[in-house]
Amino acid sequence: MNPVTVPFFISHQGCPHTCVFCDQRIISGSNGALLTAEQIIERIGLWRATSGDRSLEVAFFGGTFTALPEEIQACLLAPLQPLLEVGTVGSVRISTRPDCIDADHVSWLSKKGVRTIELGVQSMDDTVLAESGRGHTAADTLNAIRCIKSEGLTVGAQLMPGLPGDTPTSSLASLEKVLSAGADFLRIYPTVVLQGTELARRYAAGTFVPLSLDRGVSLCKMLLQRAMQVCVPVIRIGLQADHGLNTESVLAGCWHPALGQLVRSQLYYDLVKRFVSPGQSATVCCHPARQSDVIGMKRSNLRSHAERGVQMQVVPDVALNRDEITIQTENSTVTYSIVSDLHYSIHEV
Ligand code: SF4
View 1 (cartoon, rainbow, N blue to C red):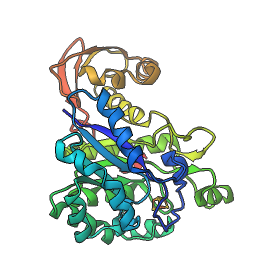
View 2: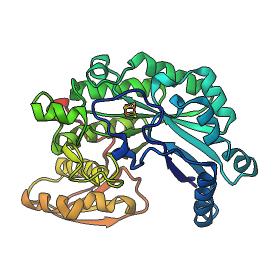
View 3: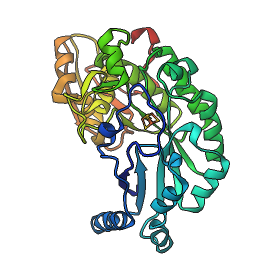
View 4: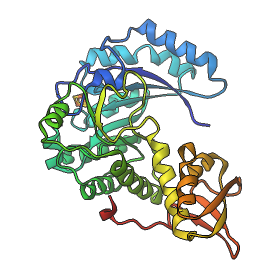
């Protein structure tokens, strides 16, 4: 059973950088105030009351945890120690930058109950990183992943396709590099232009062209499929549509409140399109958890198939894996997978 995540947002605290895309206040929804021990314990108590038998994972998101002054890191982790000892909290997760962590720091965090470290990798292309004002290199990321894995902790990599200087080819190359380095899970956040950022200024000046929603979905489906091929979970696609992130704060870029569903739906659409010809009728069976993806948002996949002359009904089948669909037509019944039966070319993005 997956643990319940108790999220704390630590905002821009501790970060000396100004990445071109970042307005941490909007992304994390936090006003920058640091949490007190009482607030932390109270929040955990509220989550404990509603989480049943599931273990709790306390997660410090946003900002750069390991760049906070050491005494503040210690203060944030201190109230968790007795809760970890008695099992009220099972583990701790933090997020940070690749250049703000080393072996000693990982070792210290591990002793304090941290089991997962998420890295804001964004890209593994040094030119993209420089043009985006990240202030670290791909080598920093490789080093950080090595340190975290050596301590036996889980490492997540956040990738941001569509940054200045990025291309679909370099996005896929970045993915391959973090996979080879041993990332245990991924988040894919296509670049969006937020009001008040350097990227917004460049966008207004015409010196930065963001990924459109369509191109972003095309690229993300390739990234997702590749991660699935090597069984590395993608735990999130697209920034969350809460905490002030909305159609006013997002000026441009690949953003949609349910981007992950759009991406998965596109994979299933492509799979049906590949194997069901215009003029055919098909019954498509899928895992129940994927039914809405196969149908598409607001039945968009069904409509698009109908427009190309394919009548299709979707039925759940618990015997199928989540990546599979069985297509029944007049002449055949065959099971296909979005992982192995779709072959994309980077030129499609
Ligand atoms: S390092 Fe993180 S918090 Fe700091 S400016 Fe960049 S994205 Fe924002």
